[in-house]
Length: 328
Ligand code: NAI
Image 1 (cartoon, helix red, strand yellow):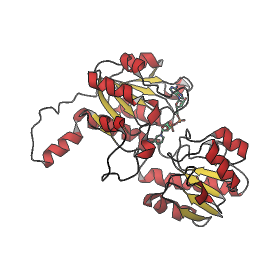
Image 2: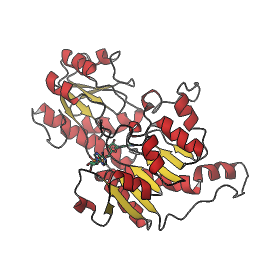
Image 3: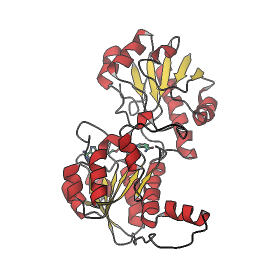
Image 4: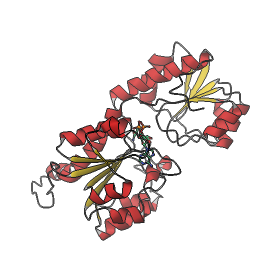
């Protein structure tokens, strides 16, 4: 059985090869899956994809024409998949719903600490022999209010970290059971935005959450508040955020994801001119810290992704499926 691994990097090969090699022949392809590259899957029974691969209806139908039977997502989010198209085409899709919520939650905390205490700027200063403190003033996290949007696996892990800092934790999640985190205060989104000095997004990207952070919702946040997004880029309207940063209403922004990241992240573009003016503008603010979708990137998470991908592959080979992991 042959499986083509799209958007693969050396670390994917390092973790997936030992886990899956006994069960299938892996073809590692560095390119994203899209309508131009789908023909590379010819001759394979399945493919393995990541967050910025295009699994729209046209690509799924092109895969089905090539007799691709299953898609193994090596990620949790599946907003990039047209689930209905996969069901119609009879292509099975499984994901890794949980690999390390701690990896992402801890990265969100790292962004908060770095932005607040300006670690990125302090590091550069010290390397230049500048030991002055002017402009590096932070604030105590202890006693502040942190709002968590989405109390799933990652949101709850993050809430526990925030609690450890001595923060008051507000949660907005219209679906989850408040009993899952009963020590925090559950509120609606507007109340959370109005009352939190720091807001961290941990809900999935859906039609309902697209541009959840926009002109209106940014205006609800206290002046000087901090916004952290480690979930999906399109939760945030980047143009609205730029205006809020320029006016000073938004005090800090930490991003691990960006709406148009597909053309940027996971690649070394250091010798190229960035064509995305919105992204380029974001990188100019002293109070903005951006990482290139690395929140998941820990040893534990990659090991678990490989393990669960193997279980999904074996289930599909046996004509079965792991209900919790299967989305189509
Ligand atoms: P999960 O499915 O366990 O939790 C998501 C929570 O969001 C659920 O409790 C759900 O009820 C809630 N939710 C849904 N709509 C909402 C809304 N309108 N407002 C508030 N809450 C809402 O998912 P998990 O594992 O916690 O992951 C969350 C997201 O993190 C994923 O969807 C993915 O986009 C992102 N992610 C990012 C990674 C990175 O490397 N930056 C890695 C892994 C996940």
